[in-house]
Image 1 (cartoon, each protein chain N blue to C red):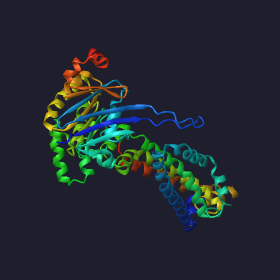
Image 2 (cartoon, helix red, strand yellow; image 1 turned 45 degrees about the vertical axis):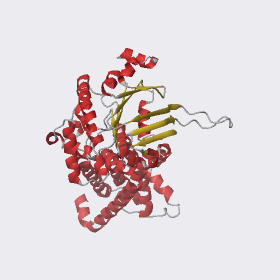
Image 3 (cartoon, each protein chain N blue to C red; image 1 turned 90 degrees about the vertical axis):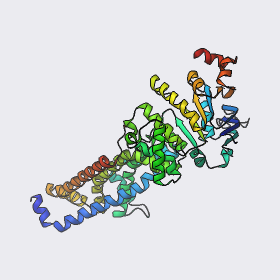
Image 4 (cartoon, helix red, strand yellow; image 1 turned 60 degrees about the vertical axis):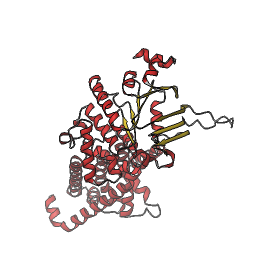
Length: 254
Length: 212
């Protein structure tokens, strides 16, 4: 079976400054991600853990081509990401960000139905899908479908964000610190529900966080990013036992 | 002679000048929308153009209107005496508030909303028409409102280059020192500006999405 996501030798370098020194060659760009490789199977959650600026978020954006890789290869459900138009690729990858980014002028229903509508689903099918997803993320469709984002709490908004990402049933989900802005109680509540969802959905997921406890709780595997490289890749158990200094530093902080 | 008596006696002429005035304002503001809104959108896509374009529009705004009308007269094609020259000048005046507010309205959209839209696979056009323009609509309309109100006032000066409009009475009144005549031109122009302001304000309240 093809993996939900395959990443090989992924690198990203900020464009260097132009030559000003009379042709002595261009100043090298700064590498934000260097030679990152991993595979995520269906039903698996890879947690990308790391400090701020370690390249976690950049890696996510390289996968859905919000940034274009300078080197390396990304395959989503077997298909080379570089071979499909970026907009089409992104509709097959769920994307959840910390700030949620719900459209404030759309109801919950229209927000969740966004990608199906872009893909031209017939309206009754979209409506049915929206109800199904709202129920899945624990929001009663009767009560919430017609509301606007500003009428929701932070936790409810992120539930809608997750429902929106799942709408077109993508094989792969990218989550960038989805619970990072929530209060601790809501956060743990959503982590628990997310954990229950992971198994049921059978999707490949890449989950970025800098919270070790969250990572160990939700990940089937942990990838530790350090200075743009994947410094460690293994199960949560292996991560706990690892003597890699950066792993130890994170374990000490937990 | 009272104002009412003046209007009664010159009804035909008054209506003609009001119509001319409305024509100058309507054509120039419509042209300014047609140029200014796309230009404002382009600036959000080409940040490097923002300074030169807004700077140039600012320069037009600072030229005294009478002088701008005068400068345009000797120019070929767009210049000369009459309504078309006046319309060019009025468009240049109306451009800044429209371009600037279109740019500001779109640039003010929450970056997380834009990132989510792109991340979901919206094309740039879908993002613009479904998200950025609706969310920026209130600010854009506020610019349109300012441009329209300013145009109504500035159009009175168009009479100086033979474009007609209510300025004809004002200039004539100034020349012969006749308050009634000045008022006969100024009052309908002021009412027109108030009406435009009121209507566009209403549209702003009705149509614009209110953010929380």
